Image 1: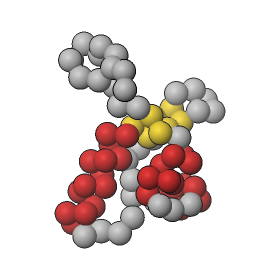
Image 2: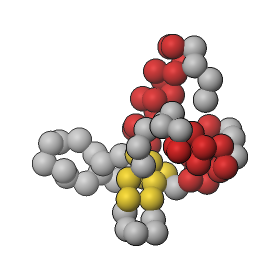
Image 3: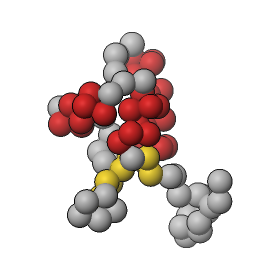
Image 4: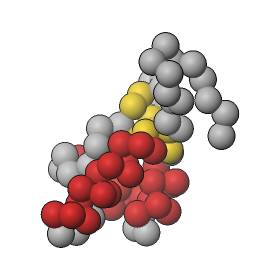
Length: 73
């Protein structure tokens, strides 16, 4: 993975599209949309009017916190 200098000496986390998020979570894209709509996952990032994604680092932190808390995705 290449890193881009953000001025804070850390690489930018890649953005995952909805199909990649569904694969990571092991669920359907519809379930990802439902989780987002219900506010049960990290906020998505708008790249443009039609392109949105989730930061991989936000999803990893969210998954880790759900494992510790015993919450289902």
